Image 1 (spheres, rainbow, N blue to C red):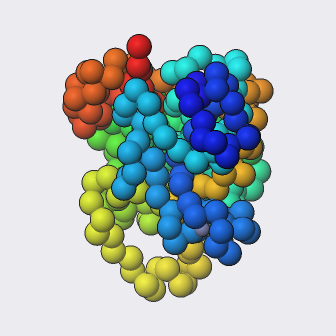
Image 2: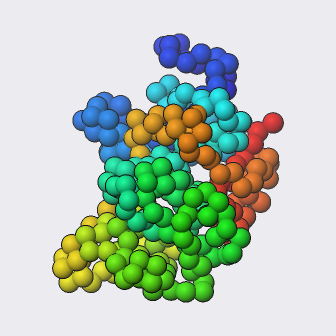
Length: 276
Ligand SMILES: [Zn+2]
């Protein structure tokens, strides 16, 4: 809810419900002007080098105020922007996902993982998702995963080969990093694309260059998404075609407990902090 606006702000008004785009950019450079604002050299996020949303009030540019999806309550709406925007940019813009392709989504219980499963299904892909508990695998199926892999029971790449008649997958949705990197690369089909937005378990990853060029693989980096993509995602959320997954809501003063919960990988979807 907008509490106060600057003297020159005319696009939003006090009392208006908005969803905030997390990315803050210069708004003037060639990247920003071409709509690729997540390529802006000044790109940062609310909460990174700037005060963020872990507070009762947050200050941001008016251009970051997005239409509020009225079918959602506050906690659900808070769970949308960063993960859906990121997963959309990875699958749609970077990996150019096509209907009928097979996608491997790592860590289905993460925020981006739970968003990626839904977006891949929205585009008519076949989704294989991984997680470390039976409970998370069941939830992954409930939100659309066609097949699941328990990464603690079976090596991911071996299981992917078995599920795809040894073809591998067209797209790997990576964000885990060192722990899964080898399996992710080995899971790719000829001509496959690996797209990554994170390195939660470490940033070292090797690749056999012979494997890279003979199989004509693509390794794609991705970071956040642009504001236009967030608007698209919010429209689909308002239509009920994509759904934010809220695992737990903690009051702001229990912020430390919420972080501990995340650090122990207990969540499926997003953990949200609420203010009274
Ligand atoms: Zn810029």
